[in-house]
Image (cartoon, one colour):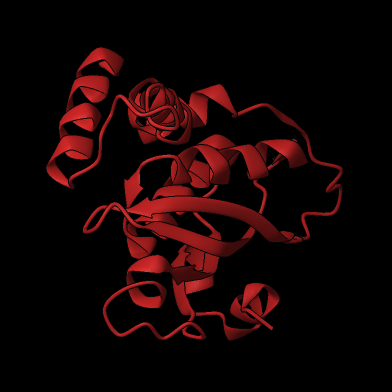
Length: 189
């Protein structure tokens, strides 16, 4: 990420909105914004495949009788930025489930995958697809479900200013596409 270019453009933005970038409260703002963007958009530096490799630590599953048991993680908190307005997507929770195929992901890896995929300019729908794709590759299974619920400041702080609206997206692959009982495991409550 080119932090010097970000600093330059933030300085120009401050001037364009009529601010004095030399006043005490704004002198370090361009550098702080560049540092913040480098942190909150860290995921742009990685492909889905690279994230799967980074957080793909698995362990042998204890499944001895061939029964497929879904692994479900609920209420993983993330935030992201809408690519249309660069507006914050917040109060986001991600529910993820997958059916292991002989190996299970470390639980913290599921949350880390969600966090890293969110650290991009995103659409909530794409975020669900990205998480589904990464979990599928990292866990070695086609059977993945992802449900995301969140608020978008492009809806709550501007435009229509509807501060109670939440957006829910679902992404299902493999057995989760058709099996309503699997979908029910992760749907927002």
